[in-house]
Image 1 (cartoon, helix red, strand yellow):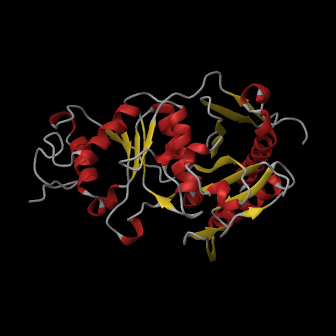
Image 2 (image 1 turned 120 degrees about the vertical axis):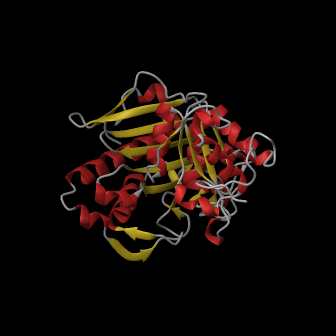
Length: 338
């Protein structure tokens, strides 16, 4: 590899992961330039007519991002790669010592409106097979991170010793680290949830949201703000920076019964980063990093954020009929349900 893309990389990135991280950083910088030059956002957001392995439409930029990361990782320390854009795990270097799972472009529906988009990945030590490398508890990952393409191009990383943020300097083309690690506030009063799904939520989630909407006159005794970007990387970054909670719970629909986000390259890396920043990540009942996926593209519920706020949501799951949840009977988001 050529000159390091990250300032202070020797102090922050473990030696065994340096090649992988440098290559990921190079791909992020390349994508940042591609997105900034853009020109024709409509061409980038156009649907290709194909579906990715999780059944979602692929856009042109999804495929560009996938190809960019694959090219950057080729010949490096990564043996196996799982991408949202591919059905199975690909062996890209038989001598590699790491396994990377990633969504190469998160939030592609934001492209046309110049909203924040990102990429997110988890890093595992390699095992004898691709299945053994990836189908293991999330807590066994050794690194995770995301890129955020917004007003700044950011790279946020953790290797089990806190969470560090880097910003791309467009003049030097290098990522410069922030002075301090990211740490999540223990409690905050912003929440992110897609309220249009209210009718599909279970009683625990609907009751918790209703209590928040009641504000200072309700059982929580204070007002809340709602924030929803619709891209998990952008919502994660806001919570790592400002605190709060993000909820994408399981629901009653067939498509949402097991959650909507992909465990291996969305839920697990978010959980790893959030826990390293002092927060909590759960599926509503159990710690997310204790889950073991059975398939590469398995979905899971995702609830994460400030520790005390997430623990309060978990109490609604544990005691759905307790007094602090059901003060007014069975409630919906905007109405009382008899």
